[in-house]
Length: 311
Image (cartoon, rainbow, N blue to C red; front, top):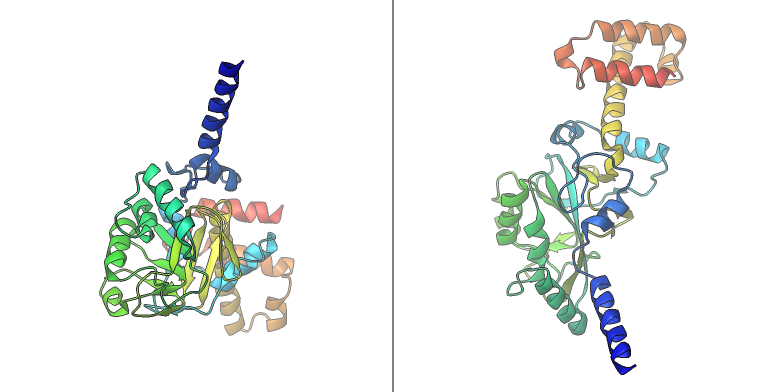
């Protein structure tokens, strides 16, 4: 009887240990979070939105992306009011998330132990852990709850490490230090709340690749971010391709509309409202004459999209 009770306790302990919370989300959990994505994934479970879509995303306006997402029920994906290292740069990428909280010694010690179980570097600061996971095309997005003093998440050393791994930049709801050094990293960019000479000492990492809050947005690992001087917008991975194509078609319609307004063929009222069959037919003829090498998408993508739109 005693042996049986002992075995039950051992089994319960093993079960609890296997179910204990890790710092980094498991691939299976990330797959559950992003179950609407049906394409290729990284080993960590994040959706692998193609490099081609990321590149085309750079030409999309924030307002177009915002309108598209609102139309599909995603009302909390935009955040503005950033400081930006390079104002004229546009950044897109696949999100790696990190959550930070105010320092608490007992929890910080547990996080360090959990990090050791995951073979993380426990000698340096835990703010380097998300950087170790970055691959080309990733963007490191951190919830630093807006803290700047004693909450600077990176300086020039970690900035160089981020760019070496991701060839991209960061979006931090928090602070950075050594802005002069960060500016020297060619190709690196950062959206952040403020800068301060202090180093990270009253803030601790708690989770990697879990859902986080960035201002008024909810961000999931594997989201696609579009960031420019007008703000940041976080796009669910399964909507990224459709958003790009939809926005590109809107751009073509705008070009057509502007041209016809200059030619005084239609009035502003006719262009700004739902188009008549005459205008739609005219637009199709205009598209047929549009050079293939100037289209932002393939001719087949365009035709398939217009076919679905009409039906």
